[in-house]
Image (cartoon, rainbow, N blue to C red):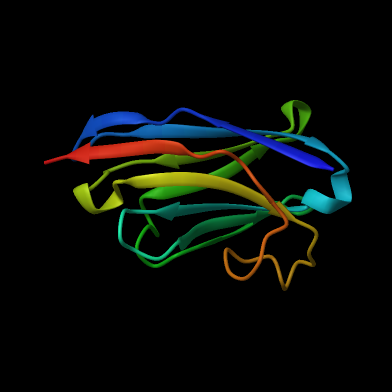
Length: 125
């Protein structure tokens, strides 16, 4: 079983920054692909970024490329999402998720097996 606990959400003005954290525990091979997703009210869930923990390979949605960075600290079993130059349209509940995957199938799409409880990010104009 894998458990994920997010933290770091909050309110910020447009142009500001936030860093989200996702502390993971449980069976390592079931969480070698970590992703960040977000969902705004009335909108579909959107995959934001993923990281293949074995190699540190990252992928991003076009909407956040160049502004967001996903990273990991293996010693702390924690994945981060550094969000810079935030925009009002980034406002959403952000979720950390995990699954077992290969390098080629580790994307922020499709079904993930484990999910955190979510952390709210609000960006005001």
